[in-house]
Image 1 (spheres, rainbow, N blue to C red):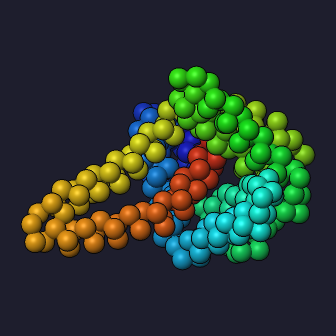
Image 2: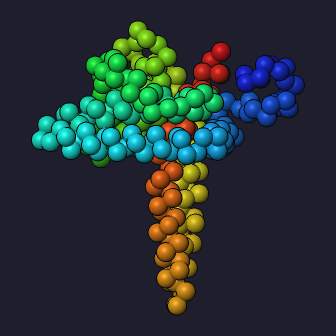
Length: 245
């Protein structure tokens, strides 16, 4: 057996490459933690640049909706294509490649294809969510199934919207549980200190200090969580691709 990250030959039964530290586990909690670690390492390499471009993408989406006025479809279409550009930037950031605001607008060169690919995914998620009673559950599962769609649109020039979605469904098969675990871990990491701050805010006199810290905590979470989640999605794309080689 060989490491899919550095190519070193591995002894039987190991779960981590002794040369590069890469996880050889194809699923479960170990893989989820490995993905989380890679996303965090990517943030440390370009924290301000990635965050700045991510913030710009969000602001431009808001502007698109405002300028679109009553024609909501205009803002929706522009926002989806901007999101696609941001997904590609996350992938470049994870790979250690240069990131810039120019790359945010690359999908606009093939606007209709980019919009169709992202719009097709959103349409199916909406339809799954409409299922009575269990719709939200199906929509969550399908969110993981369709997670690789933006990256498939980039890596394969001739892929159609339908093919990008189907390819994502095929490639995420067997990984959705690990993807859910990674998100669950993050939710717990956020929820535990948030709960502690709420409880401390109930203490007489000094409680106001913890109210302030709680507000500050949620500002930081709101600013960094979208960036972190984007890098996690890119890390899943890389991980699945490496295991397919």
